[in-house]
Length: 341
Image (cartoon, rainbow, N blue to C red):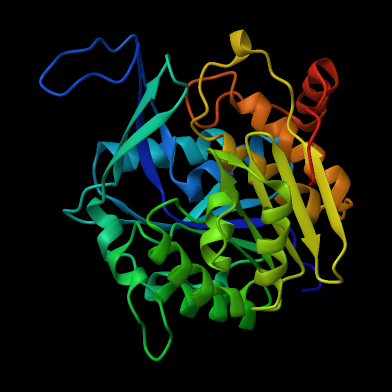
């Protein structure tokens, strides 16, 4: 890996149409969209833009397929605006770019996504050429959103596993992002990919699915159960670091068994515009810290700070700011206490 630097952010590149509504409506009734915003979406584009907003000097590359349409051209313009290398972002003729309608309920603070896959259904391991990159880390997602990638591929359990294996063979460290779908699918995809991962940064529900543990009690994460799930995951592959985040905080466990834990940033409710993209922002902060050789404790703090900055905007990435500004926001509001029992 000598001479390598930066992150290759691959997999799901889509457009998010963010819509804020007063509250989720009853079926057969009407509600009002009070704010509308088109932005990039998906784990690939969110991570890429978050990283460039954290540090414009960090080399970041894109790799995936998009449609040859207005939404696809929008994503290419986003790459150009943020200085993201887009040679690996291929527009397929006569295909539609994936689009997600993201509804943010102001009453509950919860979000609901309606995903139109478009060209995402055609993405396969053949679309990843790791011989062309000088990045140090591959960030890949999202299992469950791509039909061909989700299926077995040439002797591997899934296309995701095949892609991660190939990336490691080319000298990249690997990180996976998941999506919170049903438990059986998350377990399948997670266990498929763990033998080919160096890093895993997910939420508490996802790590619980992978480990076969219920991490939540009355809807809230139980940090001790999250830690137990992380330790199980570490036994299933060559992971150097496994991290799980949740609204109250995050827990990380290293390959040697050391545990780290921190509460999230105590953002007041009136400072939160939306939570869409906060998990991506946390992962970006952690991944940046790992790339730069920071310790896990500093990485958790930056992850939480980046997530808090993200929540200042309804869109997935617009709230993320340079590292110093994110950390200043963390200093301003402080961190929540985290019960580790």
